[in-house]
Image (cartoon, helix red, strand yellow):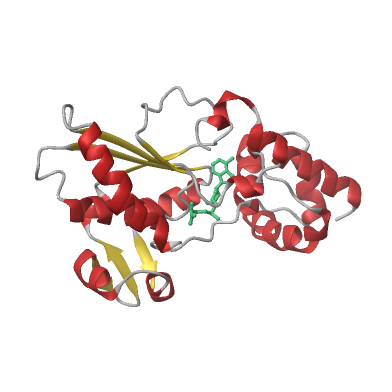
Length: 233
Ligand SMILES: C[S@@+](CC[C@H](N)C(=O)[O-])C[C@H]1O[C@@H](n2cnc3c(N)ncnc32)[C@H](O)[C@@H]1O
């Protein structure tokens, strides 16, 4: 990929998603684009990049999705979840005791490990048994990640990263070499494809927002800019 093509691609990505690509990552970018080349039947990367100029939405979306880094884990950075359980949730139980309603948003949920970790903590807290209504919304720009998250099936490697064995046994069923999250926990989360740079009009006012390990991919201007992102910092 020449420097001109790289700059064009980087500009499309930054404008559409906030994600910044460093030219040092050219090789990684090429590797990630190859499945898109094959999926759309292009001869080579050069033909894909030429076509990208026409802005066909399905192709642009596929290129964007190939550029996202979707690494995640159950209970990633355990302390965050302990603080949610021990400090945030008790405070909210007091503050919202009249309405008994909670709205929680997980803003860049990748394949669902983060919202399902939140759901397991909420399940432990037995709030629903006490008459609470909890809305747990999880979004990501990457529609393939959202489809995976909705499916709720994880490899042995994925469940070994951060998930205590007692939770694996009580909240998952084994399916061959994989593990499926229980229907009960899965139904606690509403998933939706959503770009953090788009309008937040559809989102209810949220009591808690988890927005982790995503803003670091954005340039400083996007991180700091406007009302849209100040909502989630
Ligand atoms: C490294 S993962 C973090 C997942 C999870 N929050 C965690 O901490 O484990 C970053 C996620 O941000 C998503 N993402 C990147 N840019 C986005 C944007 N503009 N809008 C919404 N999601 C975005 C990616 O698709 C990816 O799944």
